[in-house]
Length: 229
Image (cartoon, rainbow, N blue to C red):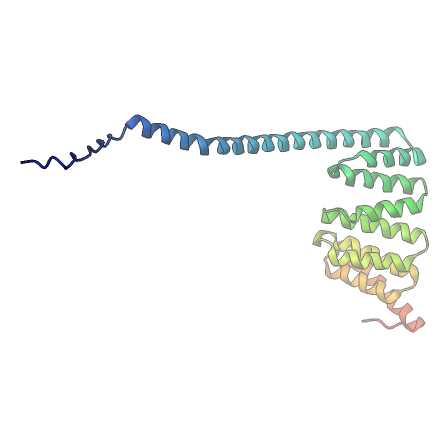
């Protein structure tokens, strides 16, 4: 007989079966939560890439524009006027066009006999990222220094250029060192320069160079300088 004092056992709620639609909804929400920032990052990356491409095209067009202006100035202006317009062009030139402007400025300054301006332009150009152009700039700067009467500084510039010059420029630098040293009366250094030219393969001038070396050795003997010969 059932005990009337006992209450019937509380009925337990039946467990609801998992609903596939609810799971899919949760998964979709998770995907959306992570997908949105990923898409945003991808959009930003594409925008950045597009901006870089636009900037590069703009820079290329500016370089082409400045290059064209350099030609126009060189063809239509002379002397001090050419130098003035090139200086103005340099102020607005993008980095990729600066070397071309500086090169023309150096030549224009020399043509106008403005040696300080030429020396400054060559010096600025000697910081170029192009190794060959740096050597050309040092040769130009040395030539201006010689014209200004500062052969000692010119030789210093040339010796530095020789250390950094690509092999294809070694002969040109050594020729300038030899000629500058000879003109300044530094016959020992001139001999060294001419001897390097012979060893570097200036065979078409070998007999001339050898005669120069012998003549300079005679001068060394007469002046009491010491040579390596």
